[in-house]
Length: 311
Ligand code: 3PG
Image (cartoon, rainbow, N blue to C red):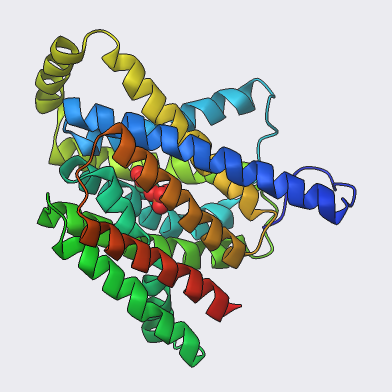
């Protein structure tokens, strides 16, 4: 990715390492907060189509205001840019809503264990849709990823098919998002922050009619009243928190994509899932059986082996 800001002076490798470290730590911390508020909201208000739309709406609003007030320089875009962004947005929308539907049905930790299999989806899609082949160790690393996720799934105490399929669909959609976004960004000069802003706006436009069709204002109004009665007036702040933190963690992740290779990014993403899995199990007192935890550990180890093999 290239930036629309002015050229930056070259930085030393230590400064670069510190910078990436700060990006990663911020990305993970924002993601943990998002996941906690997102689940608190879904527990009280089980309408994932609306909450995922609100995440995109708040992010879009933050960026439109930032551009309007000159806090962030708006990107220079043309028709070709938006055309290339369309498939990325469709994939982002599907991946986002599928993950949120999943988390409305199962524990946050379970969704993220299944989502740690994203590299396996990436290899399969690249192999069958793009005809790319990989060295044997890459294929071998899929064995612990798929086996570990399978073990975690069959031993999950609160297994739910929609929750499982949502996380699987999200994996598939995000692999396509990454493939399309690599193609779409080639030669374009939009920063990671602005790229993600445009992605949010287009995804919001795509998702809104589907959210209305799937749930709709009648259910939302009744659900909202019940949530406020159960949780109290603070409920609205939970919704604000999940939306703002959703935007911020994605924005930081796209900003870090400007600085690092896709491989480093996927390692960072797996480590992010470990922090989410561990913190959500503690906060929500999720029951975990030893064999269930073993499955998750094998899957995550497989992802690390995958990144080693890809190097
Ligand atoms: C979402 O709501 O989009 C998912 O929680 C995204 O998950 P990820 O960014 O951790 O892949």
